[in-house]
Length: 148
Image (cartoon, rainbow, N blue to C red; front, side, top):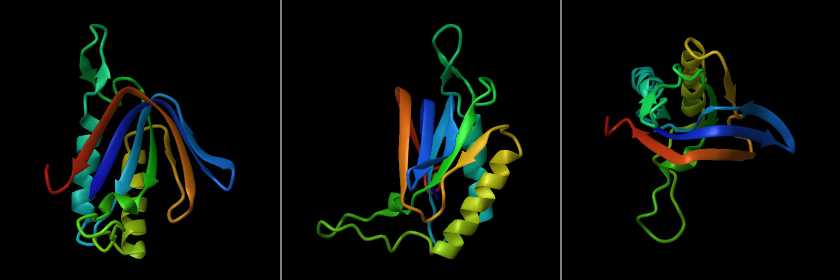
């Protein structure tokens, strides 16, 4: 499982010209699911993400978590995080989880996040989406379940 976490001052996601999810200060999280991922792996990444201290405190140090700043989440599924570009110029996505598995884990992640974060917005699984954001910093973190 992979989370690309971007610290944002604002972000939104649109489908067919209409905004379906929008946040202010918080994290835009792009979520990729592999076929061998589980709810236990999702729990581990959600916990790590929520605890990341990447917001600045009064001294300008990245010392505050999402909860400390009252931040929101915008969660967007993105199977292309499992693109394999080793051979040729056309990416292969065979390492990504099947749509049914990926959607189930995406919904599970949304539910887990809503247990502790007051504002959790989402994209639309499998839809063609437009994502806009203002990345503060810029600050982008990759959480890969195989590396944490």
